[in-house]
Length: 373
Image 1 (spheres, rainbow, N blue to C red):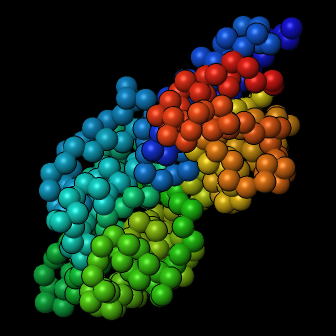
Image 2 (cartoon, one colour; image 1 turned 90 degrees about the horizontal axis):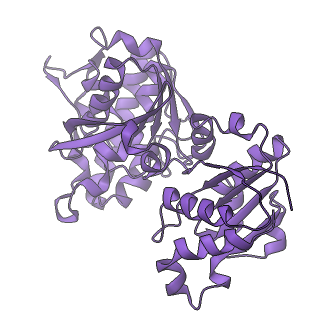
């Protein structure tokens, strides 16, 4: 019989099956019944990789703040953001997400990030100066102009007319007047969480890769790329920085560009940014084991995904990591080399794949009840 042990339970969601929060709860319930553990200290730390759903995984409802903002198409929406200690967690998709607009009504050239700026402004009003922005699931391609306008920047045409640019109208920007840009932004530390490495411009940039994925018709792409290129030039003239080639600047329809240019933001791997936000390194102190997991583990899990991020952090702290997954997609022995003590799959104890999808909580609990740590 083992003495009392501290165990961190840090799964990602099992996509299409169970949320990170529910997965953590199921594992914790199983461990509490594990005969090999005596009154273990179980700490649930549901995680995400910085994509859509990160807010729900990291922040319980009682630490979320709902704000009336302008949505992807400019429509009024109620969008939530959350906080962990003094860090505001803002998920771009809540205010400028693709799924906020019915597929038949999506028109990326005129989609806007104004609502993201309104969320940031509310966070500033409440005293937050450390802001984590996750940019997965966006439905925009305005280079973050809407966000910047909501924070006080003035976009002006050759005719001296102020306007809020969208992807289709970036080419109309003559200059950006930042005199009324919220001065509190200079006090902030912005971290942009993304695993996207694409630059702002070019064949691998925001427009040609992501606007198209968001349903933008091919006929719009050349003009939108010209507009984005023009906008990048205006940004450089305004702030003296060329951010267009920065890896990751193409994520979220280019929303990183003005944050890099005006707010000295940093772009980080999604899982690394998330682990920092939940103070994972501090939680590892004194831990005897970590249990992580997600729907499928394969070679892709080695590169910037939730499991690899957790494994890397735990390795530095000399804490063993056990992985519970839906299924194992590649050779288990190869995957163990990423620093895992063991990998267990609910698919191995389920009668079929459909059952493992619909009964993930029950199966995770069962694995946790009998696993050896």
